[in-house]
Image 1 (tube, one colour):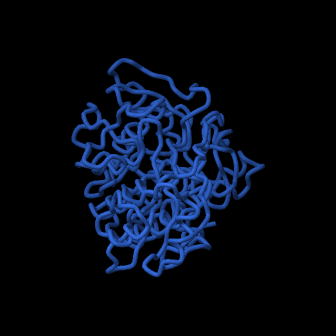
Image 2: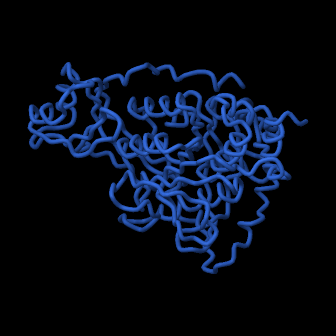
Image 3: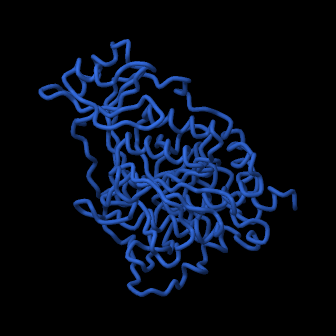
Length: 409
């Protein structure tokens, strides 16, 4: 299983490959109650060749560029009035000025939808179990902070944003970016229709701040209050994080179909030395899920307090390790604390561990960091006889990974 971090996904290539596939990016919701947005996208993500004038290209199709990812040749174009995405993409495919194009389909956050029994709010301002919850003992936090606190490492959280003024997060954040609504702050706030995802990013940030206290958190908003983003916002977020010094990126969202634009952005981040951590998904399946199913990703599934796979958690050969994901307590967007459940909240345990390891090994390659974490995990096959070799190397051991990074037994 350890050699999984060295492979690339079968579809990987040095250039973003053109595709005509209309990517259905469905929400894998806890309980399966949310509705996927399946309507034809009104925008496309286009990668043009260097030297091509995007405005002239767009004008030749009777459209204008809406957005551009700085430092790249990637743009978002509206589908021309009276046209449809499929025919527009077909014409772009045959344009020699274009490297690749795909629909700007929706990407959705993991835990939205269904009955909201995964919420359990505390309106008070006391941290309670956030400071010392059983999950920390389960993943063997132990004396890890004696050896590393994550100092010098920047962790990007691509999500719904972060409440920077939360008392427990003050001093832990660096200025971030709103890729979903540029020129606005990357705050975690209710700006959607249902706002069922508000607080998601703040909770992930709280876990990273607790487990890697001296790492700096870079909030990158790629989803709105409904937990909805697009391929373009996610790719823009990845590029921003890499450009602004992220060493680890947490992505607790996904899609059931691949995206060439997303895959290329992830590969470029890895090549730049960034460790990518992704939630495995909440559909109790081993079907591909992206970005979790891409090569060289630290994919995290969820287990219960007895190390049995959580009923909702995805599994399969893409999983690297498991961590607790049920009833996890962390900082919330209203300034208080809350519990939430899902693989989204298992992922930041590994994200923080990667930050601790990177602080000790600033020049380690992402694959080496992931190997350190996987090598010290504890097998959970005995507790999960029906999922043998489907839960990676087993339960995350934070202190073990840190000690392994400095050569201590």
